[in-house]
Every structure is written in C-alpha cells, then in structure tokens.
Length: 309
Ligand code: GDP
Image 1 (tube, helix red, strand yellow):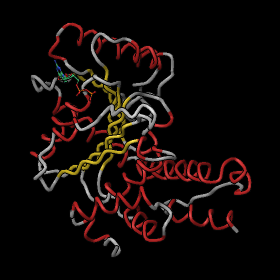
Image 2: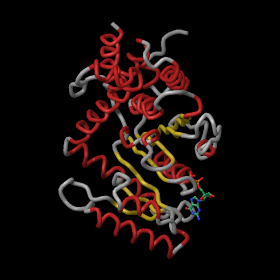
Image 3: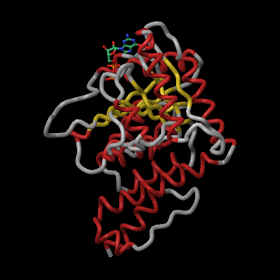
C-alpha cells in the first residue's frame, strides 16, 4: 500500500482519513503510523468534546442534533463512537444508529466507530490516537461513549470538554456524582426535557449534586453548567454548543488547554507502556518523561526501543 499522505488527510479526504485510522488500529507502532500521528499531534485544529452517559439516555440522537447545528454554522465535525461491547457478548451498544444521524454525502462530517470487540488492547488508547488524527482535520471532534467511569472506556483522558448526559427520572448517575464516583463533568445535560417536570427536577438535582461536591465555584475559571435539552423541541441545543465553545475558549485563554493536552499525552504514554510491556516493563522504563509538545507516539517508540534492546 502506498504511504498515506498527511496532506490529503488534513485536506479533508475522507478515504485518506479512513485509511489512516485503519493503520492506527492495524499497525499503531509502525514508523509510518507514528509519523502520521506525530504530524497530526503537532497541528491540532479542533476542540474535542466527550459525550458520555448510560445507554438510552439520548446521546446518539443528541449528537445528531448537535452535528446538524454545527454543520449549519459552517463547522466541520469528526465523530468517534466508542462501543465498549466485548468480543464475548458480541453486542453493539452503539451499533449503526449513530450513522443514521448524519448525511453520508456531507464532506464536512466523518463518523467512525471504535469497538472493543474488534481488537485486543486498550480501547481508550486507540481512541485517543484516532482523536489526534481527527483533531488535526475537523473543527469539532465529538467522542461518544457509553457509561461513566469505567477505565476501559473512559475518554475524559482524551477530550477538552466532558459532557455528561442524564436522563430525567434516573437518579443513579447523580448519586455517583455526589459520592465522587465519577469525575465532575464540564457540562451536565439533562436529556428529553420535553417530558416536563421530571426534567426540571433532574436539573435541580444535578445543581444540588454539583453544589454538594463544591464544584461550580470560582477558582477553576469554569462552573459546571447544567442544561436541559430536547431533540424533539430543539430546546437547549444552541446552549449546549455555546457552553462547549465557552469552556474551550476559557481553557485556551487560561493556557490550560495545552497543559491539559500535555498531561493527557503523558497519561496515554504511561498506559501504552504498561499495556505493551506490563509492570515489569514499567519498572525497567523508569520514570517516563514527556516534554511539553513532544509527540507521545515518538516517545513511545523510543521507550520501546530501550526496552526491547
Ligand atoms: P443513546 O443510547 O444514549 O444513544 O440514546 P438514543 O439517542 O438512542 O435515544 C434513546 C431513546 O430516547 C430513543 O428512543 C430516542 O428516540 C429517545 N429520545 C432521544 N432524545 C429524545 C428527546 O429529546 N425527547 C424524547 N422524548 N425522547 C428522546
């Protein structure tokens, strides 16, 4: 196969991006893949938003509505749908549904599913690598995951903004938040607000939960926003996008964007070394380091070379 040109990937050639993503899954440690990932890592373009929540909460439908609004506003969108269904269960929690929400002829939207059942190893790591590629191409990268807090599917380590979807009438997830079991999201979205009173109650509960954890107070420069949205009435979709943009702008303005991304790259490197070489490898590698802006993909290859030697 001829090498995939980075220029065609960033130029919006979907076939080139699909080929690049396939290489990231098939041969993540090959020099050509590392070079592609590193060039993308060095040229971030978009903001990355994770949309998480339990199955049935309305994530796919909501993402469809958000994508349509972003496209109408002239922004390009890359989507990664992470399907944690195991090889054993063979199930697809996300399945094909997400694809229905987008126009396959629209050059400004690219949707990719990443499923645990297709591969061994860390789904979160491969997802993060795919994100790096897409971030170099699209204005907004959306990463959808099911559930909250499971390490295997946790995308908090690969996104700038975390949106946590809550369904009216289901108190569990808010209980988790209160108990500190889940990380505090940047935006809490109460879905299906067209159901009325239960949605208003869920918003109030979310605000109470955030108040109890002490989040939403000054200091970090951002107070977690709680929004009610409906894909039936369209309520809250604009506000959700505005909140995503506002959060991203604040990160950028405060210099936290780069710091967060560097920290995430460091976490990625650590997880990759652990996955590839185990605890013994971690021990032999000693303290891992990554300079600000340095490619974690190149760094991994360097560490691997010393461990293989
Ligand atoms: P996901 O599993 O989180 O991706 O959830 P889906 O997007 O597949 O939605 C689950 C169900 O909720 C579907 O039957 C949707 O039609 C329904 N749904 C999604 N959004 C809304 C909404 O805003 N209002 C109402 N009433 N139903 C919704």
